[in-house]
Length: 165
Image (cartoon, rainbow, N blue to C red):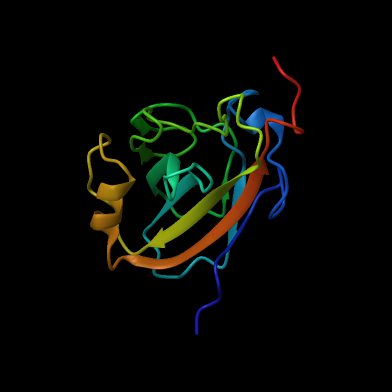
């Protein structure tokens, strides 16, 4: 039996507030992520980040990146772009209307806490999709290819977390 994939961040722990710099109210940079127990047959990694608390939308995608080479650490601040080459070669699909990480930033009038879940997927393949693809197309492409997945959930709240601009 394979070990369970573990996803962590040195920026925040499970269930904690996401620090300002990783939100749309701050620097809007992706947080550092670390993985443990990656399956030995892994060929690539994908990461998504979704808002779980948008009314009438089950899961609003803020980030999708795939074809990350096998590694235990994803540094903070992955640059914008369809295809990135630094710090590794990968493809960023369309999420939140952009090719890149878009951190928590609900409209200012929304005062309830939102949960944002980062999910790492370990795949037995590289994903041959155009960067214009969204999470729905990516899901279809990787059906049957996910070896492992793990999630890390943080929160953001306009009302009590950060001062107004």
